[in-house]
Length: 405
Image (cartoon, rainbow, N blue to C red; front, side, top):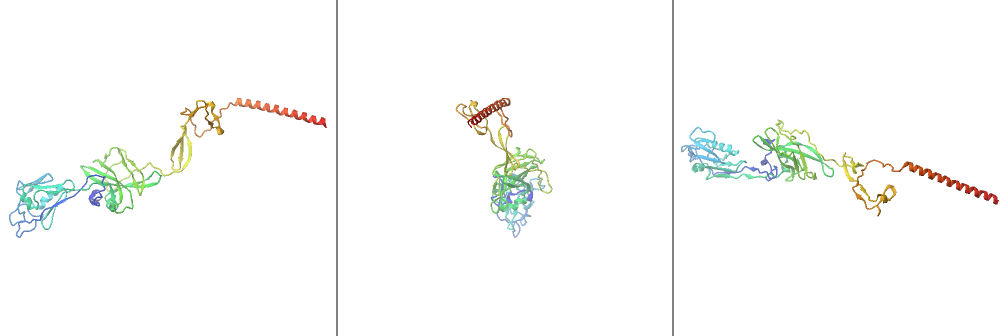
């Protein structure tokens, strides 16, 4: 990764891809007036110009003496006659040595123009403030009073625009991909990338991005920061967030919205360990959405729930069959197909009966077989007796007709 991680300064002004609102700063500078040394003829000061020297030499027109100080962002540099250590300077040191000391504090190297004008930089850690208790010598460096420069605020916008896509890819690593599904069951390919955004005291902070528009150009969003700073301790273990879950509101890829998505990584599912190849190792990324499915079959379970089985392997509760009872069960009016209707005597249906439902079952008959067979025999005998009566009557009619003839 370029420069060891994502550098907001490499992105288009006003389009810092860090977490929205994250306070980041860009370097600011202040340039002194052009000054000359004590040579004859005078020449513009350079890095080799001495901080103190005799007339006619390549030294400041007004030099520093032992006991003088220069304060840079609260750090005091003290001048000594010789043997300087730490935050000390020998009065005979060069301008270049002083500028190196300043760089060690601000993090950005000062420079000297060909006309002898020194430019000091604030860096990104703090606003610049440089002063000295020797105003004349400080003036010989081109600065009157206190030299200041306020860092340029560059808060995070949380997105990478199309014009910055190439820079972003070069300063981040692949985090894998996963196919998720929206509410209509449409598959959506979600591409992920990780970017190192800060390192301090052995801890590292990373941001996770997803690609919202693969063909984005100009200032259109191409990648979106999920909005969480993932911090890892010196051991590589995740220290923040501690919940094991982050939420992404309205995750959208190529105009396909997945809505609010939660990413769960547990207590140890996300770690940071050194990789000489600069890549991420993806052990497992899964999601719990499903493609669109067609209804294949219906069934009713013992709890009265109507369950639909779909072609995508999902079983979904579609409805519930409720049970009711009547105060006057014997007064129900029988209808075709084994159905009954409420009457005034039965009263209205009262929901909440204590019975059960047996899915995929046929109800057994509640008829008394012995009683029904007895009735069948009686009916059969009656039928037989009736047929004999008819036969006898017929014989009598036939005999009568024969007598008449």
